[in-house]
Image (cartoon, rainbow, N blue to C red; front, side, top):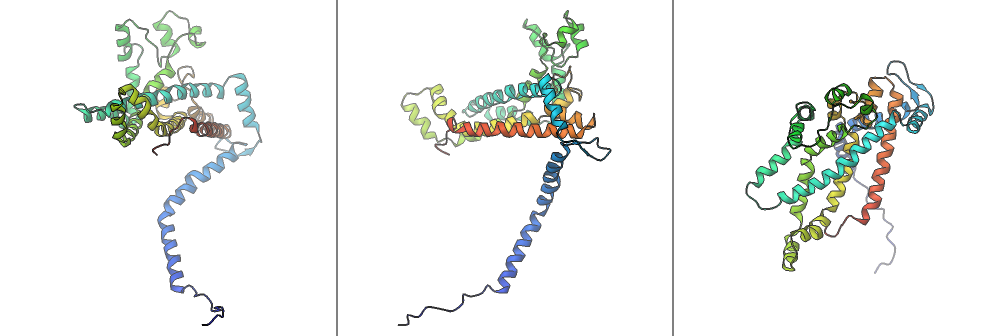
Length: 335
């Protein structure tokens, strides 16, 4: 028996195998190169350039001129005086804090109803999902017709029921001509116009995407849980509260985060209904529109970049808070 240690060298990797590994890596990189090029050109480069521009005065014509923290100081002064970015921040917060929770409540409610076995279920599912596939511009124009304060369908129905008819997207001149209130009452906010509420209604109309996600999640819940609860005497409301809702919390959390981001980034429909300037009287001037107007109408790209980074920081903080509190209410038992 030979007890001497084995001093032979380990086998070297064959040059052919090494060449094949390099060729495989190059092949994978070539397939991923369009995505990598798009990532660098459309995301990484603008991300870094906007950070630099936020410290510059840049009018898109002359070269950027470094001004330090001047743009951020302007944002701070506007927040302190309640003008400019402060109005946009208030409008954005109002829109997000109403549209996101309401879309979750209505989405879960509709998904629960549409998961029942009723006749014509596929037709109802299609009807509720259809608004989410209509082009944004077309749906915005449709809503402008529905919410016309003079002869719109919504106000006609409210008027026939003897209810108050909001003025939605009416201008100050239109509002004063239709009511006995003065123009100053319209301007100082004492008149219930409802322009931001109209934006919320528009966002709820296209919540079919979230409803489909809730429907898929409800379909994944084990039927045995409902059968056991039914045997124990639990009614429909108790089964929903103790089974459906807890098991939907991961999906609710996902839609909460995504809905918040989408509500803050909403632009197209708001641009269309507000005539591209936040009308009436800046009541629909959200952060995304304020950023756009600052960059391409006022040609102040440095200030607009600072607004974009403020928006990025606010979204990051809000998302972090949501994730940090999710452990207290998101149920992960069957996931």
